[in-house]
Image (cartoon, rainbow, N blue to C red; front, side, top):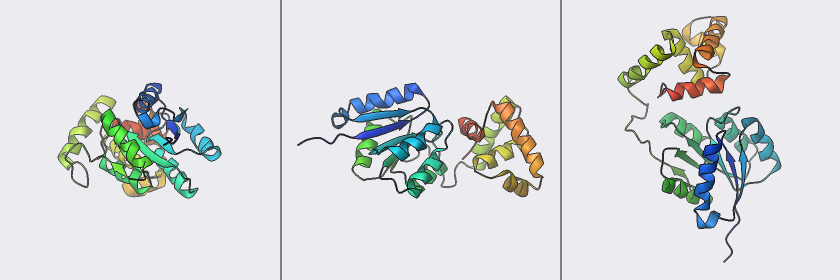
Length: 222
């Protein structure tokens, strides 16, 4: 029986990650004839999805220049017939739930084994869902307040963040607008804007995606 020739799109801004995924695919007998295309820039992703059809999209949740959640929203809005596996380096229940609720077929941690990744690919292409349970024992609401504080202190010390800046960083990463943050903290939008600029300077961020990446990098969000 002739094996299907799968069309796969890899979207990650790190070449070494894309090469690693291609290596995994090459080890799978059913994938040796697969057509694999790569995207390094988030700004290129939606145009490619509009013009081409793929069986599977393997998507980094923090693709530079494009929020992975927005990509999933676009796929649902346009009713694209493509399976999606989102992968991330961050062990975070909230993120995993958000991804699966937006129609992703699979969620994989980058720290998982090659066998886990192969299993995810096979299950998703068969029309099944794959989501690895969180590696750490957490409650449904995330880390407890004591654990949060243990992450908060190093972040404040290393990056010289004020308590207000850490509050605003958390709210930015939770997709709140400047207006919403101002309302939540009872400060002006102008003040929020000043804090946002200071956060970007201290964390070396260039946009909102970079700020969110930094927040998860320090395991600041539950």
